[in-house]
Image (cartoon, rainbow, N blue to C red; front, side, top):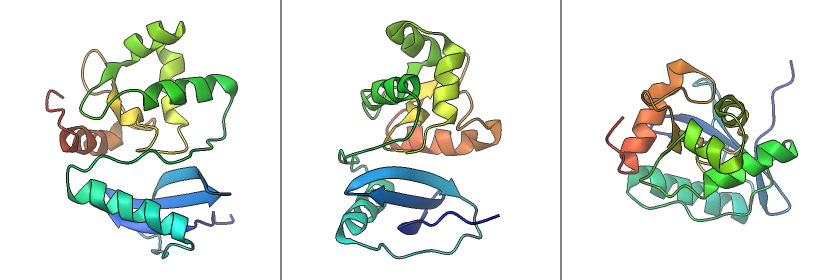
Length: 157
């Protein structure tokens, strides 16, 4: 299987992140396996993004708005846009987001699971009414979601 090429791979307190860009847009920011080799940023744009991510992880600095170009269906893009409107330090339940978009909670969960630009499309801010919920389709990643929410000032989950 061919390995995806990234414009940068950086280490973070919660795992390695792979960044892909195209024409000054972010197209992907993904969690990568621990054994993935680090890659220095390939342009000034990717360096700016990596610097911003490092500041975010090291302090309470909020991530700036970068131009995003996620690949997905029109419905997924609609959900991802709605998630970007959830401010840092706040959460919404899958049900609340579903009601706002006039769809079902499971459809919101599926859009979260397929989110290609983690952190910048903050699916970690979407939680279950019964607790934190999963993260990126895996219950085993709830520790990452918990870390991100606490880092952003949400301590109720």
